[in-house]
Image (cartoon, rainbow, N blue to C red; front, side, top):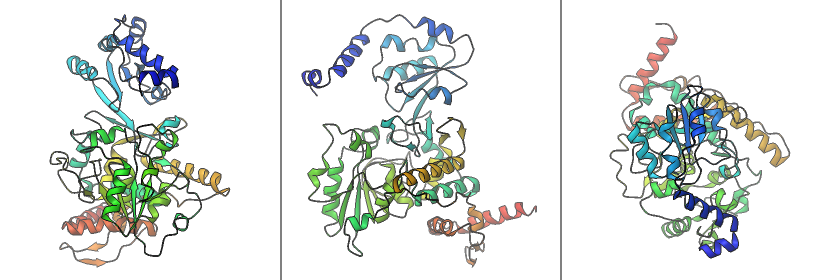
Length: 459
């Protein structure tokens, strides 16, 4: 948008930007009052940069710190940034990559800890743009998980964790996977109660290829893709590669809430696809899809957990482990050092990596408790949408050891699975066992089960 157009259409934004640019060149005196008060309690000072002003709940998340908000603009005054080392025991928290490079220089030169913060993969009822509190956050001291060129804490977790010998972590992962298969998603949303298959008039057996749109100026595309592709570009690729299939485009919900001029227009490819509007939940859309195309969307991971074929045109955290079709030339040797199953990646990304917070109290709690709260929210939402109360499947901690089949040391199956909680548990475990079988690790899994059983029997 030109300056003149901005002045005419959005004068408030025009003058705000002008003032911020002016402030950059001013030599502001240090915030002496805030600096002095930071020493009164002796607590470390959490300096937040790039956080929107409404995210005041960060004070509840960091109760052991003096919390200072130091500007939401990507260009806070340099004079203000230079005061960071003057605070009592400063620690810097930045929202994603929304901060100037000078911040990294200051932290490096003064030995100040720098932590990247972002919404977790299970976020909230409602979008971040609607200023809803998050159900989870990630705190990464290396880099953002969507950065294809850098090693993040999540990369380290996925490369170094022994998932085969940690039943508790895998159990929590299966609990989350079951909830996802039952409709849980990043942005908690109730189903419409209708039938998308009927609305699209799909023929029996007709193959469906789903294109998942994203916020096209999102940092996950900028840092996670080899080159820029819009959702419309993916529709054209999918249509060319699957001429007999039904192509669906699901635009990202945020682009429907606040469309920007530079976003691609879904109507431009309406002749190639059906557009899934906001009436239909992600759960309903994934249910009818056979194949998914996306760049870096987390919804692609939800599709993989449902057993869908997923083509990636970027490198999100779940790409490159062996269960996605990675259609890019981004080097992965330093970021991906082993093959993992979807459940193992889920264990790293949604059990070990994030912190979960109760949306009312912001008290930190376990992934298992977070799933129970999320499903309770989903129940209330469903009642509002349909006018009737719906009860989701009970959230029960999954025990992968109890459902592993008995096998000999050579990997030969001896008996069927036993002690399963309900049918979805066994179905969720099936791809995990297939993955183990393909890599010759069933014997190891059997020995693992035997050792756990022996511990339980007190041997």
